[in-house]
Image 1 (cartoon, rainbow, N blue to C red):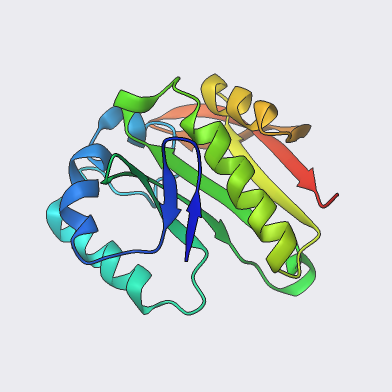
Image 2 (image 1 turned 180 degrees about the horizontal axis):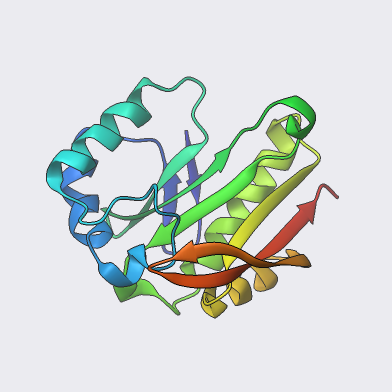
Length: 171
């Protein structure tokens, strides 16, 4: 599957994406705003393992962000179960070299529109580390609404942070 944006596209995974993604993912500034399950350092072995895992999933709602033919980031939905069956989480990151270019805002809008049209969901939710003001602004520009702040609910790099919870409800 492929979704085309203005100057970028969201597409499925290819084996060669490991080599393209690895240097962007192995950036401490990228890692500092993501959950600890995103490894650091982000070695080639980690990248290859991730791509192999992505290729094994069916269905897979996790996409490469491609700019000028190069894999430069990732965006995806984490489907949940139980009472959250229709409320996936969204997660994303992009190369620091592209921060502030508007690509991620557009990618979030594109993925959300696709998801609401093609999946049996009623909302998309995001949790943002309290020190990640760029991500909060990106979600707001993509139409997400801050629904709450979970005080002192996270510890990242030894710092206690709030989690800001954002949601986008199906139109």
